[in-house]
Amino acid sequence: YSGVSFKPQAAGYYFTLGLGTEDGSGGVAESDISYGLRVNHDQRLYIVESGTIKVYGGYKADDELVVYLNSEGSVEYLQNGISQWNSTVAVIYPMYVNLYTYTTGARATDIQYVSASTVSKIYPSNASVLWKCAYK
Image 1 (spheres, rainbow, N blue to C red):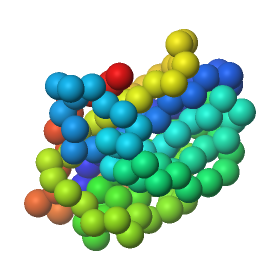
Image 2: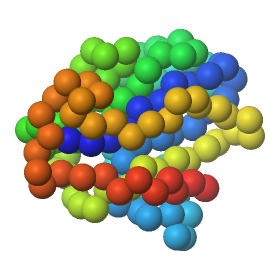
Image 3: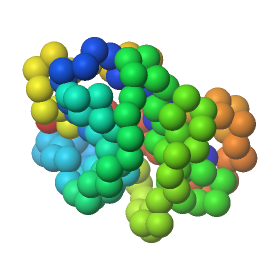
């Protein structure tokens, strides 16, 4: 499996980061992000799947958030190493890391490619994420 991890910073800003099929050449809207986590300005965390928003819970600055393709071939969301949601939306390839920012100054640190060794999952040979950041 593979995916992306990041740590949101200060409250008061919001953005969505995750995986999508857009390569960024024409810009990225939030609805282009197939599987993402929206970090909201009020420290609420939302799961966003192709424009559908699901309320999830809260976050703190420096929480580790992960969106990745798991060993079952579906997308899973982690917060601080704990699985929070498994998507039921079918995966479409290729996948790219996508970022959509709403506010100037929105920040995330430690944005990283994650693989099987990062979160102790089995890597299926047919799943991959192209590491190309697309943003708007």
